[in-house]
Image 1 (tube, rainbow, N blue to C red):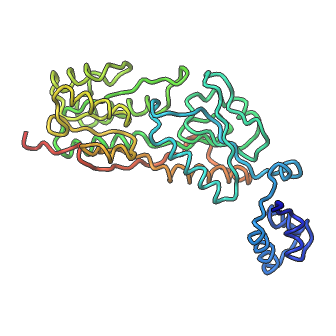
Image 2 (image 1 turned 135 degrees about the vertical axis):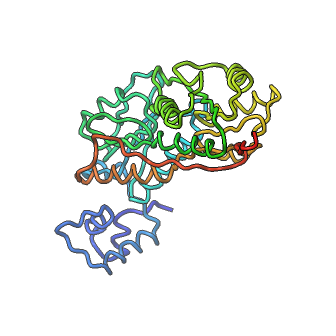
Image 3 (image 1 turned 60 degrees about the vertical axis):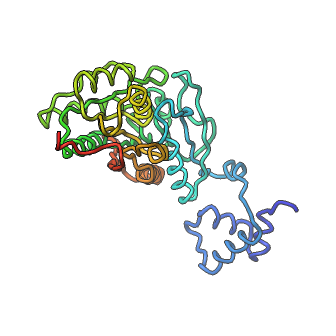
Length: 338
């Protein structure tokens, strides 16, 4: 069966090809289209299963209907359990707004610029660890949003409120009688750069602990220790009753090492982690988590990008912060009886 053409749609609807094109591309300024005519065109499109040729539309129009998704391939090794969810929500909201998304994975050399190799209307950059790689994009004038990462001066950034998330986690533990709470930090670097959340969570942990008059963990600073050494020092030697882990990857490592060392969760120590996901629900005990709401950050990021593309004023001076959520499961318990 031959592919449906614009002329076939126009013939079915009884209008000119230019009228069909205007309706489908939403170029109706100064061009009145009656609701019943618009409905007839859209019905013809559906009946004939017509799909516009994106390449031809891009060549003919100032607008492409395309959004570029730039970045590096993120794996769970880099704390990526929720990151695919975030990108998916961004794509879902762009799709709902009528845009197609083309993704380009940059070289993992830490140097190549996050700049789309094709014409597009805007750019989303998920999980950027290095704002310097946005320089070319920032100078191009293309509207862009850094999602769960930092932007340069001409772009917008939507991130999670890490201090609020740390506050949720520590308040949950303190309310259950815990006073010695250790923090298992991450110092992973992606091509020599840290994700903003590593420093933000580390700093917030120290501040919130001190606000409550509690001593921070010996190992919460700018160094990393192996999981067995961490548990030996913090749980066995220092008597910590709870651990906050930077992410789900580290929490799983803690759970495995604890089992090998004969430590039980939550009997010997409670465990709470950033990043939620199906694994947190599937393991035993089920893991209490600080969830990063993918739907919330996806919606906020796309809303900002659409505003930028429409020429509306947006907040660029400071990142937009998305609230995190506490998900209580089985890995934390009260210790008032101790």
